[in-house]
Image (cartoon, rainbow, N blue to C red):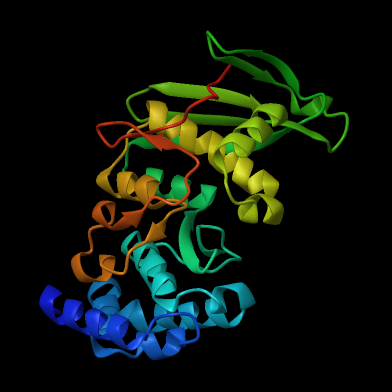
Amino acid sequence: MTTASELKNQLATRKETGVGSAGNTVKGLLESPAIKKRFEEVLKQRAPQYMSSIVNLVNGDANLKKCDQMSVIASCMVAATLDLPVDKNLGYAWVVPYGNKAQFQLGYKGYVQLALRTGQYKSINVIEIHEGELIEWNPLTEELRIDFEKKKSDAIIGYAGYFELINGFRKSTYWTKEQITKHKNKFSKSDFGWKKDFDAMAKKTVLRNMLSKWGILSIEMQNAYTADQETIKSEVLETGNIKENVEYVEADFDVDFEGTPFEEGVTNE
């Protein structure tokens, strides 16, 4: 196993020589013995394929090429630790440019995947609601009535989330499109994901809010919440500790004094 001191020394050397900054290739960094071995420790036999996907990810994104390549690798390590692919087409997790650094971003499919892994969720879903489909939404009783046969057009008016635990506990929520937009304008400093796929980001917002307030969060899910839409320090490669290696540059949620993520400003009202 790669020792923390070995990896720390190699990372320190790379910082001193400028390796890992924008302009150095991600492929060259991944060929570093310590970094390569770290991915092998996390992913075992799947490491070569995963590292190839990282190279393809950067080669296919001119903006990521301009980022500090070590921040790209650190973000990918978070995804690898959570056992989520970074393929843009799959929608589980992304590595996105923010200034000259890359950020880890979890997709709504990633949240669903992590929730299902806990073994505590019988069902979980989030969907778009079109004009005419919403019959009733009571934010106090959480009575949500939808009739999909009454759809009038493809215009999306809101987003509904639902989950049921194996112990029978259920939760429903509904956000109007206006509430989503208000939330985005208040909490998101970057429009990257919203411009790319507004509906996916909206569904993620509804799902994350619902799970953080009422769901069962495993340690894995808590780590994902902490890292979501943040810049990850390269030290995560040394320790594997996600919570201690997050640079709080941008987030769609605030963190309370116990470190539990929660959303402000928009509830299921």
